[in-house]
Amino acid sequence: MADHLPRFDLLILLRIDEATMVRRLKDPGRANDFGRYGATLEWSLDWRPRLEAEMLEAGARPVDGQQPLANVVDDVLRLCTACSIDLSQN
Image (cartoon, rainbow, N blue to C red; front, side):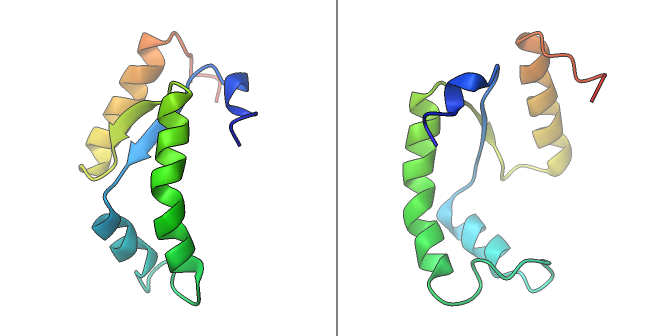
C-alpha cells in the first residue's frame, strides 16, 4: 500500500484503540461479516498497528476516530481546509 500513498494530496488516519475496533467489528448491526468470524478479527488486530505506523510514516494526519462523529467530521474538514483541498465539487 505504501507505494500508492504518495499519490494523495492528503492522508488522514482515523485512529481508534483496539477495544473500539473489536466492538465495532463485532457489532451485529454491521452489514459486513469481516472481522466477526474466523481469523479475520485476529488479522485485523495484527494489521491495525502496522497500517497506522505505515500511514503516519507516509505523513498521514491522525484524527481521533473515537470522538463523536460530528467532531471527527469537523476535524477532517479542518484538515482539508488547512491543506487547501476543496470538497465543494465532491
